Amino acid sequence: MITLTGLPTLATERLTLRAPQASDWPTFRDFAMSARTAFVGGAKTQDKAAEKFAAFFGHWVMRGFGRLIAEDRATGLALGHFGPMQWLDGGPIELTWSLWRPEAEGRGFATEAARAMTEWTFAALGLTAAHAEVHRDNAASHAIAQKLGGQVIAGQKPTWFEDGAVYHFAAGGAL
Amino acid sequence: MIAPSLHTQRLTLRMPVLADFGPRADFYASDRSVWEDGPLDRRAAWRIFASEVGQWPLMGFGPFSVDDAASGAYLGEVGIYQPEGYPEPELGWFTTPEAEGKGVAFEAARAVMVWARSSFGWDHLDNYIDPRNARSIELALRLGGVQVAAPGADPADVVIRHDLRGLA
Image (cartoon, rainbow over all chains, first blue to last red; front, side, top):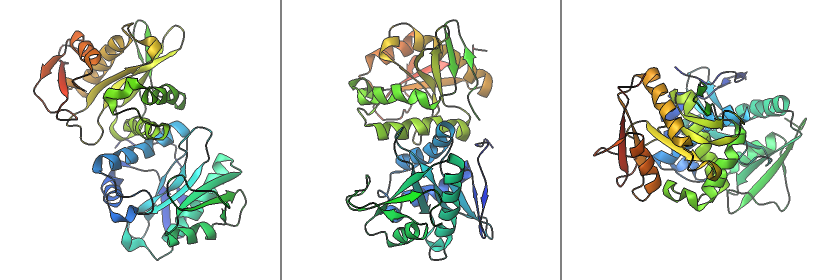
């Protein structure tokens, strides 16, 4: 199989965060086309889901960072994508986390993966700051942002949602 | 997997890098992209460009950035694209406004077709072109392509097939 090379692998207590691979597509597609995306832009068509999936790879190739896939070491299942992304050159780097599988919720997996990803992002990229955007009603994601030491930037509106919060993360913050 | 470098008389074809996004974003922001679902804003353009470059590790083919071999100036992009919904890998091209009308896409497309034949052994490679994109259709025919009744990316697409069997 053709793969991305040179990407980090991060190990947490229960998870391995590794490079995206072609075999992640069916699971990602099912997530991206589902109602689980209500807080991250809504369900996509299959074409748009595939475009986003392939863009994970191109983002790594061109920017040298991007999304990793969290895998449950106990089952080998891919659980979701976690990683820094940057839409625009010179724009903020956004920390992102998404659990693909509903059955993986409520077990602390997203926090565990997001924490490892955030530590890696600051260490590897030498950043001093990063952002995360969270929809108003996405309680689980607000909880993660807060556990990772994110501070709400007063008055700043998310780019992606009508209403929500933008969190600021600083290097060396409370992870 | 990254793109090999291909060399023609006047051009170098190579793996895209981040700096190549600027001209693509400009293209998508302009009316020149009207036959490619444009105009599109910069974020939408980035998603498309990143997904196309992402085809290299996913599929082993994708876009080549095209430089002037002498000056190193970026001239455009020619490559093989197969996003979701495309029945087959497609030959596509784009040039900067400055590089138009100089045979750049023609020369680069020939090199990509030779590379595709030698790398994958494909018998043919198709263009999917909006029927109103006369300039692109003209180029496809000038390259020796023949319009065929095959499915494209969109039901209205003109599909022009290039026979690769005589190449490489």
